[in-house]
Structures are given as structure tokens and as C-alpha cells.
Length: 524
Image 1 (cartoon, rainbow, N blue to C red):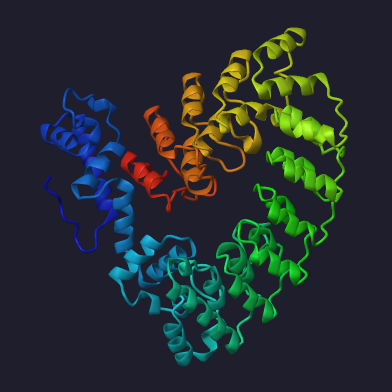
Image 2 (image 1 turned 135 degrees about the vertical axis):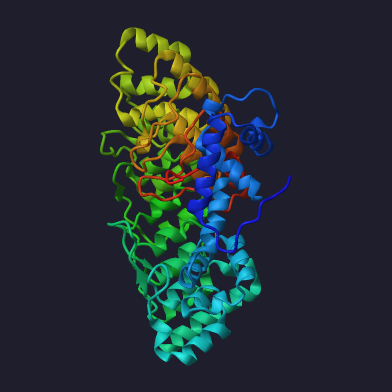
């Protein structure tokens, strides 16, 4: 197909006007407009009659984008915005890309503007280029600890948060050379940046080395130069990596465990070695996490295996302690259908007394149709009396892809749009975990695609896009989930309540799918 050529400095408003004019012409059934629609819009490429009144402005935007050789309106929009960035905005965009693993974007910017990483001391630091950094310090000796860039951070902070070292050995070596150069000049090893959403604590350079970058040599260097280790972030986020070197280093240097929730975060993974490392440094076995309970409660909720349960009980976590709602770990295991955990807790001497309500939720978690019907016959209002936390039983079935259980619960009278954790519906949770079969079942049962969760203000479509990047369930099919929601008529908006755009930027397959669908933010 013949492609149009953009001018050197295209106007986004002008392109939107082109799409608006095309949209009006399509509604007037102008032959040339209908021909453009058929040539460039995949939904209308098969020919046949067109319901002009059903064509949306988003369809016209897609046609205009493809006429200029772009796969979608968002890609054209991003390209035009890039061409119209100022020098400072371009430098800041590069810095953000290097700190967020968006290396393809960063490489494209550097290919178009080879000198970009030399444009500021902060871009040189983020690109981990010691020669460029040295030249900046020679020209401006006081700039070594000067704040600037998109996050108003110091050069050392950007070095520590940059992930460019993951792209090759030269950058890993450059990262260390940059850090040494700055520290020898007197840079503050405890430099931090305030997070834009209070009350989140400041994010330190050490957090970047331990959590973001997982770079033990850099973390060791910062600690040796006096970095504050009890920053309430570094230890916690070091547990996100299965390489425990940063965690071990912080603990050996005396990092505080209690009050950081670091042990709880380690239990987000089936990682007995990591748990043993944490417990070797004596955290309080009585510590609790608001909304969850003790370490044992948390381990049960996260579905951890029996070896981890054994270790926590052996460490001294009280087996029959009750959480804020008055439940023991055994009761939670029964309520969630984790019979293996309940049996192991019973073997350790846990109190196995449970209420009729516990037995009902246990039956629901197992998808025991006969038991559910018998219990509802005895207490018809059981479902209506469940709390939001208890209603999460249906979301659990959705997120785990247990179709028979999900179908049984819906047949028994569970609301398909019931809200559970984070105020998300079962459809939200099926989308987050990429459970396509569960999602289709929920859609067939009338699940709403436009309900927004309470915590993040997002629809299931947004959860699917964000989950493709941050959940990445290996058993999930995020592309199929995204397509299914779009085909069912979901809004394709991707901005949460903080106006942040939720795109799976490092998951190319999911990103390409979203772009091909013409997923839009509300300002498009």
C-alpha cells in the first residue's frame, strides 16, 4: 500500500484533525473515505457492507496511523511526540528508559542522536559511560553530586538505578567505574529520591543496587563507603531476586529485619533457602503484617509448601495465633482449599476446630458441589453474608484457572462481579494471571468488563496489560486474554487512577497485540 510521509516536525493536532475529518466522511458514506477504511483497517479489509454509524473515531485514528506506515495510533502518537521533544525532554526520556529496562527505546534514541548520553552529567551516569562522566566533571567539578534529570536525583543515584549493565559486560564494568569515580569525588552514598506518591519512603541509591539492579559489587561498594543500610527498602526489595547475595550482604552488615516486612516478602516466593537466610539473623517470630497476620498466616495465604510451613513452625511462629479477623493458619488453609497445608498444620498439633462458615468456604475452595448445596440448603443466606475477604474464594478459583470450581460457585449463586482483594472482581484476577479459559467462562456468565478495582482504579483490560509485564504467570496467555476482552467490547483505555499508562513495555508480544488493537489512553 502507498504510504504517506510525515513532515520533519509533524503536528499531532493536525493528524487528529485528519482523523476527525475522515470519521465525518465515513459517517456521510463518502466513497473515498470508505475505500480508505477498507484498505487500512483490518476489521473492514474483508469487504462487504459497512455500518458507517458504528465506525468510531478510534477506527479513523487507526486508518490515519496506518496510512503513514504505523501499526496503530499510539505508535504514531508516540513517534510524533518524540520528534517534538526538546533536547532536555529527549535526554530525560533516555534516562527513564535506561532505568526501566526499556533498552530498545533507549537504543533507538541513541541511534537517532548518538551524542545523547553525553548531553548531561545525569545521562552520562545513567548510560554508565565513565569517559563521558569524567569529561563532565572536568568541565564542572561541582556537578558530581548535583541533582537533576527527570527524577531530580544525583549522578550516583542514576548509576545505581540504571539497568544498562544487564545488556553486556562493558556496561557492567562501566557501572562500577562510574560509581567509584563519583564516590572518590565525594558523592553521597546514601543519596535518595522522594517517591511521588506519599507516604512511600524515599528510594535510595542502595535500593537501586540491591533491588532494582541486583548488583552485589555495587551494593558492597556503597556499603563500604557508608551508605545507610536501614532505608526501609533495600533489604525488602533484595528478596525479589533468587540470587541472595545482596540480601546476605545487608544482613551481615546488620540490616534491621523487624518492621521492614522483608521476611514476608521472601515468602512471596517458594524459596526455602532465602527464608533460611532471613531466619538465621533472628527476626521476631511474633511479627505481623497488617491485613494478613503472622508469617504462618502469610505463608498459607501465598500457598507456600509444607517445607516452608515446617520451617516457620520450627522457628517458633505460634501455630494457633489468630489474625485480625480472628482466624488461625489452619482455618485459612481450610477456607482456601489448601488441604495439604491444613493436614501439615494438624500434624504439628494445630487446633483443627472450624466453624460451619469455615467448612462452607472449604467446600467452595474445593469446588465440592454436593457439600455446597447441602450447606446452602441448611443456611440459604450464607453467600450473602460473606465478607469481601471471604468472597475472594471465587477470585482464587479464577486466578488459579480452576474452571470446575469456578463454574460450581457461579451455579451456586456467587455474584460474578463480587469484589475481593484490591476490590478486584474474578474477571480482574483471571486477567492478571492470564487465565484465558476462566476469563471466557466469566464473560459468558455476564462479568462486567468496565468495573474498576478499588485500589488502582483499573478495569480487567488494564490488569491484563499490566499483568503481562509484572505478573507474567508462565501458565498465562496474556495475548489471548487481551484479545478476548477487546473482542467482547472492553474499553481499551490503559490509564489508572494516577493517570499512569499501563503498557507491557518489555513484553513485546503483549505490547504488539495492544498496539494492533489500537489500545488508547483517555486523552486520545
